[in-house]
Image 1 (cartoon, helix red, strand yellow):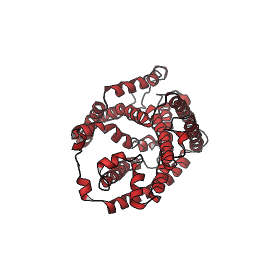
Image 2 (cartoon, rainbow, N blue to C red; image 1 turned 90 degrees about the horizontal axis):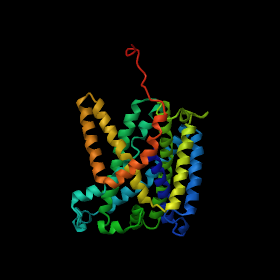
Image 3 (tube, rainbow, N blue to C red; image 1 turned 135 degrees about the horizontal axis):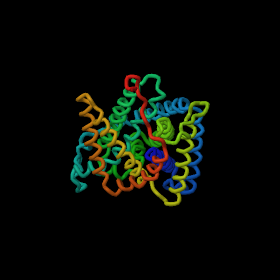
Image 4 (cartoon, rainbow, N blue to C red; image 1 turned 60 degrees about the horizontal axis):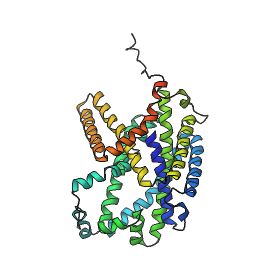
Length: 346
């Protein structure tokens, strides 16, 4: 849940960055850590809160519309970038030797960013209890990973064929907007900025649903206090949702007091998910019976260990500190005992 809340906070900060890029006169929002930006983020927080209270299905329908809306600017960018693509530009210092950093070190330094863009692919599993057909959960997860991978590869590689890497690195985030200005004029900035704002708002809605679902599911399995298993008349996990958004609101205030930036939140959110990802792979390896499942578990464990190594010990220890308050509540919660099937009953 802590990782989910960190992702929610990062989403708020990213939204402020998008608005600042599109409207430079909104300097009062700063980097998303001024009191004005905190007030705006708080308003959005509670709008989404009461939207989700109306029912997860209603919120999911709105998120679907937001997803379709953000695919339009992405598709336009990919099409224009493919037309403007030049192989000689793409090949220019392709290995990044001008940076003076070995290729393997470049890969290691980008692991947390790479992990960040894929955080959330497990969302279909988290809300799988609400699915009409459980088989759709696996299909949705695989489709989400492949779709996101295809979009990221196309956007990244095609961009390197439009402008050289050195120039691309100097473009202010969101760099896609700067590229669109080069390809289609000033309207390109508007198209990308609007798409990104819709994307961030839609992603935040999804993360709110998923973050609220985690304490709810834990409570139904007796790993959390039973209080958080309560739902309202719309079958929304109301108690869990209040816990999540009160935590986010408190964190927003802390951001204002400490002046933290977006990159700090991104790093913390990525670090918080590293240990759970490794443990999921290890558990799959433990229970796997088929050779294919064992191979997947081994690969997941190796990748999880590589991520822990690439992130470094400092951030890993920080994540342990953040896990400590949540772990302290386990002794006061009843232990979870899986239900036995009739065949297992003595």
